Image (cartoon, helix red, strand yellow):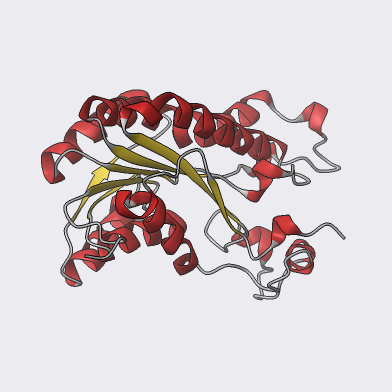
Length: 268
C-alpha cells in the first residue's frame, strides 16, 4: 500500500469552495479520502462534490461560515454524520479586502478598523482558530489526526499593501507551531503549507488587467519568483497529501512546506 494512500480517512477542507481549497479537496479524494467540502457557496461546493463522485470518490458539501464559531461546530456535526469522524482537517479559508489594503490614498494610519478586523477574523479566527478548536478537539479525543493550515508567503515577509493579511497569516504560522507542540503527545499533527502566488478569485484583479495582461504588481511578483511563473493549484496537492498521510509524515509536525517557486528564497 502506498504511503500516500488515504483510503479510510475522512478529510474536511474548509474553504473548499475556492480555487485552491477546492483543488486540495479533490486531490485528497483522489488519494482515497472521503472529502467534506466546506464553504459558504453551495453551487461551487456541489461542483466539487460532483467532480469527486464522477471519479469514483466519496464527498459531501457542508455549509460553513468559518468566521462563525457556531457554524463551524454545526459543520463538524454534519460532516461527521455524513462521512464519519474527520481525521484530516485542511484550513483553506482566507482572503483580503480591498478596503483594508494600504495605499497612498489609504495609508496604514487611516485604514478602517472594521475592515482590518474583518481580514484578521477571516484569516486567523476563521482560517485556523475556530476550526482547530472544534475539529482539533475531536481529533485529540480520538487520539489521531492531521491538521494542515494554509499560510502565505506574506506570513514570512510582510508584503507591501496587505498589512492586515500579512499579520493574520503570520499568526497562522504561530498558532500552527503552538498546536503542534500541544498536540504531538496526543497523536495529532499540525503543519502548514505556504503557497506562493496562485491566481484565484481573491487576487485576480491584483494580478491581471481587464484585458488579461499582467499588472505592474504581477510583473514585480514574477520578477521575484525564480520559477518565473505563477503556481498552478495542482501543485499544492502533493504537499497536502504528504502532510495528511500518517504513513508518509508520521514524524512531521510544526513544519511549514513552501510551495512558492522560490519566492522566499530570493533577496536581490
